[in-house]
Length: 321
Image (cartoon, rainbow, N blue to C red; front, side):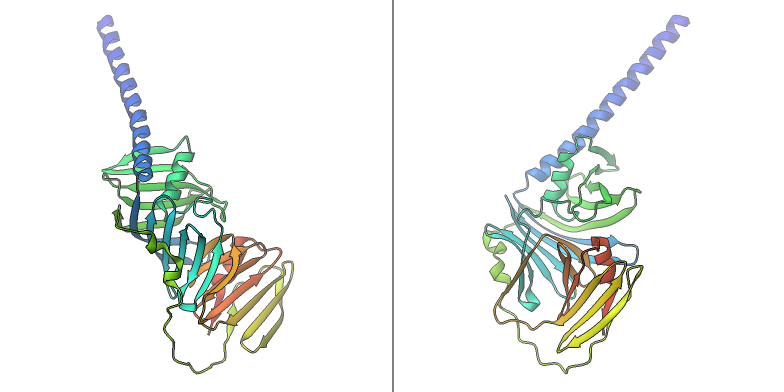
């Protein structure tokens, strides 16, 4: 019996070793399946819904993406006023068609940061993490890896899910507390769609705005509900269609709100380094500056002391009535 028991125990241990070995191999295979598929996409179109969970307000954004290999992008953020990011041979442009405004953007976008709605950035993050883990959840493949988010350093982990056919289903960015912060649910996905370079010509989306009827001028009331701790409103002034709010104290910052006239010609504005998302649209960041549009108003926040999180808290709290 002793010898027989030893053989049985040996067989059980061997089986466990085989199972563990197979499981480890499967994990590697699932990651490789995902990265090989994403790397092989020559073009695609997708639509998605993105939710950004912030302490004071959740932001919901509808995102549409067209991609043509090797580096042509058209990303449309749908909201009160649609905005586009277009990358082509001549650069990266951020466009607000309703105002005929055009920003130049960091030419390394999108692979200079993590983006939950772009498959190339997702693929780059997975491949960069040698410890990326793959697993099966029913028929779905789930890959977890580290990320490097340019504007939110607290985001350090990604969970990407696709189905058995490798069609994208969801991306989740998590912080150091393992809390879900950015959630992208992919609605439609068409690989190798019939896209040409003309789809990525920024001029195609500018200069064709319909003339809007004149609206009766009304007094604008600006409310900034979030004030930095230790700071107070020191002065408020209005000239023509521009309002300036100056805050002084432990943190000094200035908010400028101006009405924007729709230009007959495309207006090219300064180069910006990064973007974040607000309820009303995209927020553009440079050193000491944040700028965004709320319908026909341009809102700029200046400070030498604010973090990006501070800028977003202030911007999310500003109401125009």
